[in-house]
Each structure stands twice: as C-alpha cells, then as structure tokens.
Length: 301
Image (cartoon, rainbow, N blue to C red; front, side, top):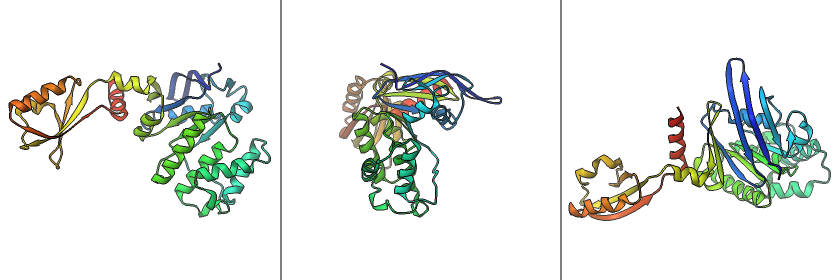
C-alpha cells in the first residue's frame, strides 16, 4: 500500500540556517498522526514542503505517492492544509470563499458538500456573511472548511485550535474524527499536547530541524516509566522519609509525589501507616504526553 505521506531524508536550508536536517517520516493511509515540537523546530517548514509552498534543499517528499515537486498538481489535489496564519480574502462571503476554493480544484456542483462542511463547523448561519465581518475564531473555521472542500484524502492541521473557543474545538475534533474513520489521513501539529495524546495513534517529535522521537503514543508514554501519587492526609503532615519524593504541595493541602514505578505506591502507604497518618484522598496518575515531550526535548538538548 502506498503511504499517505512519505518524507525521505528531507532537508531545508535558509542560507546558513538549517530548518530541517535529513528528516524521514512515513505515514500510512488512514492514520491520525501527530507532528510535535517547540517553536522553530521545523514543523511548518515540513508542512510547507508537503504543500509545495517551499522547495526542499534535499530529499524527497510524496503525498499519496505523488512527488510534491515533480508531480505537484496531483500532490496538491490529494492534500488539504489548514495553515497556522489567518489568511483570508475580505471581498467574499463564506459560501463564495468555499465555492471559489472548489473551483481551484476543478470541482463543480459541490454545494452539497460545502453545506455539510459548514454545518459540521457551525458556519451555516454565517454562509452569507462577508469574511471581514467574522471573528478570528470564525475565520479559522473557514480555513478548516477551505482545506476540506475538495475532499482530500490527506488533511494537515497546523495549530487548528490556536486561539479558538471550546465550542469550535469540540465541533472540529468531532468532525475530524469522523473524517479519519471514513479513511482520511490526518496530520496534526498542536501545542495542546492533551489533544495529541487523545487523538493521535503515532507521534513524531522535531527539535531544531531534527527528528528526535517517532513512535506510537502509547509506547512513548510507556517508555517514560513512573507515576505520580496525589494525597490528602489527616493530619496534614507528610513523614520526612517521603519528603524527597514531593514535587508539589498545593494550597489545598494535596501532596504530589513522584514514584519510579506503580509498585512503589505500597511502600508509600506503609510509611504513612507507620507514621499514623491517615489518607483522606488518593489518586495515582501516569505521566502525560506533555511531560514525555519535555523529557525528550531536554534529553536531546
């Protein structure tokens, strides 16, 4: 089966600045894939190479088997990109904007799909509103709709929920999940790592233009073993032997302890019993993707 996205030893130089350094990533059809990294890591550069907006200095990038450079027309037809920046034409309504976007891809009689996209993104009541009259969140919804209007099999979402309200975020993820279930390949970049953890089956992490991690989300979480235990105690007095494990003591009285493994929970409980401290509340928490991300960035730094 042809990969939805194939990036093979792709590099990009801007003079003496190396934005990407021999990056290789393969995304199979139908995957929900996360592309993560701090600002300046090279994520948007890689997306722009896939979209044909930037020419790679070296290597090959393909979308649905089409070389983004040698077969750029075919590659662009199978890709939809939601850009980070709010770019829009102020002279058209929402419906006109989406109809013109359909025309770019040679699509006629596409109004039924346009109506469906607007419905799922809560844009139906703004269909005849001029783009310049929309709020920033509404304009971002239109950018998402533009990326989907030609039904591309591969969809790239570059920070799609940055600065938008909770309602749009929920509506967007509901619609995107549905597209993914229907077979669309989704590539997501986001600084909201809880979104990536909940949505993405695999994750790649970039730092300073280099690929520093690539694995399933669950494997990345398991690789960084350990857990946290949150406790509320009576009396509110933690035994001194447990003090080295404390990473936080909140104003509400809760202690957060960092443990190397889940089996260490029993040792903590035994020390509390010995000190005659009663546990009022207890919660065991695993590290989340944000913590794994920070550890990998620091390790590779």
